[in-house]
Length: 349
Image (tube, rainbow, N blue to C red; front, side, top):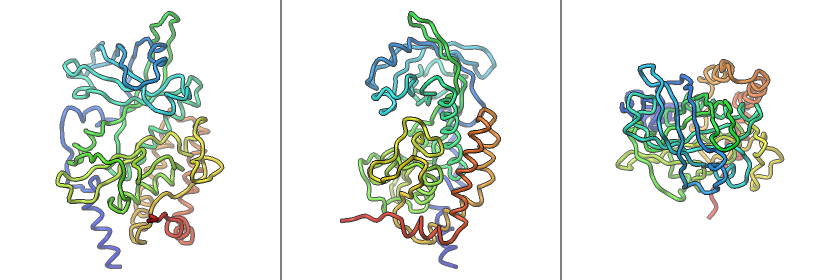
């Protein structure tokens, strides 16, 4: 019992986002993500041309209209480009995710003050279920925020997209911005570590276990702590502490079940809603600590989805049912041992 308590106490000091005494670094670049209020924006561009280019390095001119901090309407010239490998290169989405580049001198006294270029997650295609998928992915990020501060913050928006090509068109959809890697690290008084691969056993075991179990909860296998797929690493500036793995891109998760998501070819599941624990072997005390985190924050996680008004009622029911399955597992000692201990991964020489 004392060993377990010691490990749990230690977890609070080695996991960046769990240190209550560690105050957030204030700064202009943080302002955008210090609120969950939905931004109302107008983004005008020649989207037909933007989406016709398959590379992710060519920026195109665009104009964004927003309300500044004083309540006045402002227009700003920005640049946008496509991003998202699968959705961009395989014509999966007619409206791909974007990166928006802001002119720094013009962002003063706006929600985007201090921002330079940030990711925007969009609706993929026009049908409403695609917009619902974007809403769910936004809430997945928020759910991980509930569990740990060592996570990407997000800011929701309703955007009127105005097409300026020959065939004028417009569409109004939900979207969200994602915190930059650099700003996440600064907020946590950390630095980003550039690695191509890493031995998973070098990582902070508590946060990695929490992250792996979160991915299991949402039914996501589209990540790798070994190859750092959909993962960034952060550590203290002296790199004296084990790195923390911070995940992103949850659109292939079973909780969303996007039409383009397919089962992981190496895992041999039949559908994306099948859960597979991708975590590596951990001490039982580490597993139990992660489970404790999920249990104590269950109500907050459920309320996050239940109270979001833009989320369709039927999708809410599906999500709650899917989450119920996860909580049934972590409330069963036999299933805990089977899923998170016996079936945990090992490294082979």
